[in-house]
Image 1: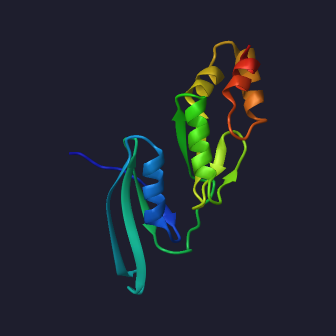
Image 2: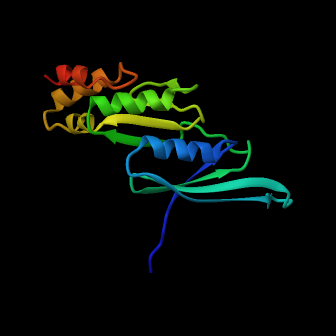
Length: 157
């Protein structure tokens, strides 16, 4: 028996726009399907939309159904990028149009969803068997918003 699992993100408007935007930013991503109804909620009179999409092989769903459950930093999507250029491109795209910078590679996009945009090299350096080296990397990362891989390498050295 095969089971499909998805993380469901509750939105208060612009769900389909957000899914299309995310899929345009992350390679190998696509919107799969969506449906809408005016017969949701406890009284059967609430409008909602459901959007299924995949980001680089990971399935998600947006339930765009109103303000009852706002997005928060309790849920974030981590994207490990291959290099500084992709970190910069994705970071800039995600904060454009009203997003906000956060600490340690975190940001919030214009739709209110939190992301961690982190070069894959950072995780490797933080797991370095030389614990003093790993501590220097962590300390440097804690001072950053968008991760600066050159500064991380300098701290590691």
